[in-house]
Image (cartoon, rainbow, N blue to C red):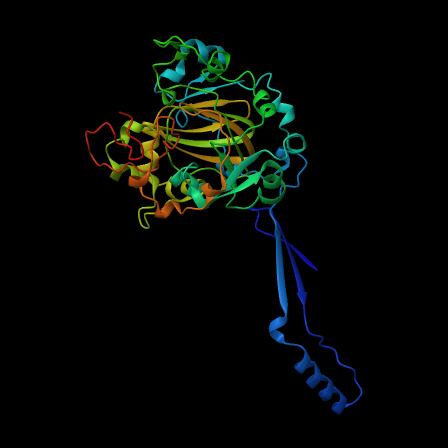
Length: 401
């Protein structure tokens, strides 16, 4: 039995078991030795020799903080020349109604009073919510196609299964905008940040009675309202989603830290060439995982200068919320084992995925075949297909008119 550690990026354990043909023969003369060898050669097929490798990708640390961290490589101190985001108190966030604006912001002390600070500690989360369902998949691919339309890029999992068996797999990231969150987990994050909290307090706010006066109706469609949506992400060091954009969203970290690269929508809205030069490898035209983009592509002067002038490069620590405005391009890299919650405008509480959701190949799907509905949450995109166009419907996956 040989136990070898895998590369630090996975922190997994590889266990190799070898079953080999006996190589020591009785020393009772040359004839007996040759005869025994011949018998063994006839009775043992070398092709049946086995080399079995079992890789344990589970997180077996006591707490989230005990996991590996790449802080020395990817962390920084949020110098204003690098990050440049306003840092608000919760009171300033609410009084200024920053969620209605187009400026990313950081909000400190957002998790004060949350039961999740205790209930979502690693061992306690597994004990309380072992069967909470979600999906896991390659963060690079999920960022490209979106978690709602990832199909067979994703596979179903539970909180306990992911943490104890898959968390340190380099291609497994726990993230699902349609997660069926148990009520207890939702309550652990109260009071919700505004404006999500306002909907929970009064889901009928702004609604009036219809002509028949049998029920209240809201003139604003659900896709334009912050509702009771909450998604959870759990990932190991260096995991995270590659460049993508969607509707307005807030993300609050409970444990760990995140490195964010944000890029102003106005810079790529009508210029797909600029977008692809920023987000993809110029030589191969492929996307890289977030940490590889920072290592290999970000140092190029063109990219660095673009983010410094028209974007932000920020560290989000535990307890801090970040607000990402509509269609701002962004990429996230976890630093250490990281747990966060997210809410996005237009999305309601999830009910989980169905088995058929994992069957299709997203690379073979067509935008023309999608059946968009008013309450559809598939408003996620990595690329804008129009180049230098004046059309306001620049995102290809939904027409909001």
